[in-house]
Image 1: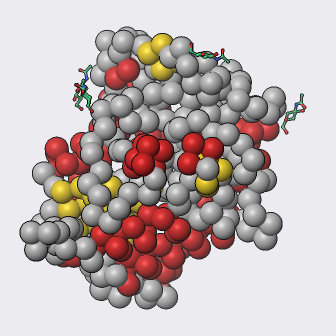
Image 2: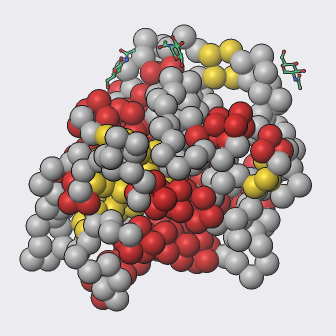
Length: 367
Ligand SMILES: *[C@@H]1O[C@H](CO)[C@@H](O)[C@H](O)[C@H]1NC(C)=O
Ligand SMILES: *[C@@H]1O[C@H](CO)[C@@H](O)[C@H](O)[C@H]1NC(C)=O
Ligand SMILES: *[C@@H]1O[C@H](CO)[C@@H](O)[C@H](O)[C@H]1NC(C)=O
Ligand SMILES: *[C@@H]1O[C@H](CO)[C@@H](O)[C@H](O)[C@H]1NC(C)=O
């Protein structure tokens, strides 16, 4: 809470610790056909994508906060060719691959709730805007906004609109859970409660199609990796503690635990508690997908440099200056210590389009 953070604080991944990767991966059934008796995903037309998240998804929203303060209702978030992955973010590739409108509420540095893991950002003299306190309310306000020409700001009906939630990197990471800096009385289940509560708020506003991303393999990201793939003090975490084996072990546990909660609580919330009647919720195993890139890089990475899944493309000093980028970032799983590369995000975007079609082995479908 007392730290000065650099602009982008992202998310990262998970681990393969306890995982029996039954949501996909090599050797998994080719595809999961959905909840018993139901079709996997009955979206007839995909015309709009709404994203809630952090720097793994942010276009220009944190940048606007830094330059101008809170965006007004009806603000159009411009595509950013220098987002935290070094290029365009995954949502911009979904726009290209599926020809949809994008309404992107993700803010770099965000957590689910600043009542759980607040992270102070000196450039805006406030905590990073979070999903609960900023992103979801900003969307709800935009969803009611009518432009001067009389058209709704958010185009198309709920039947054609998909909501993506990808959060966790900051909540689980530095200056937050991995360092026991959460608000007293909160824990990983308070965090997962928060995520389902945000889905509930969007559902109450009319949302019906939800994709919950699980946590990326953060323990494989250079910033949380175990020796020999670890990094020391860096642009995001200049005072990183010295015992990287200990940090990596903590992150392995966090990622595996949260992903197990998402995996089992989603069917509980949807099918047993019937929290979202009439809605469809897919859990996108982006963790499994990114581990597949890690394990089988030549299936996904396409740069001209040697393929690299444990290092990263863009090297900066501990204050974020003097950056030197590898000329072939598409050879890397990670753009920097914390963020996936643009090629990784292209793979995520392509897979997301399959998830929405209801036919991806990287998703489980409920409702
Ligand atoms: C990136 O975007 C900026 C404006 O936002 C533009 O001036 C620049 O040409 C773009 N670069 C590329 C490689 O598209
Ligand atoms: C670092 O943490 C690991 C795991 O807890 C522990 O086994 C090891 O002794 C620690 N190393 C140092 C130098 O304290
Ligand atoms: C890698 O593949 C993507 C499509 O997935 C393409 O847009 C990109 O230009 C390719 N990169 C290189 C270096 O060829
Ligand atoms: C990082 O690079 C910038 C730009 O050259 C420089 O101003 C800053 O002092 C450097 N930081 C460190 C810790 O060396």
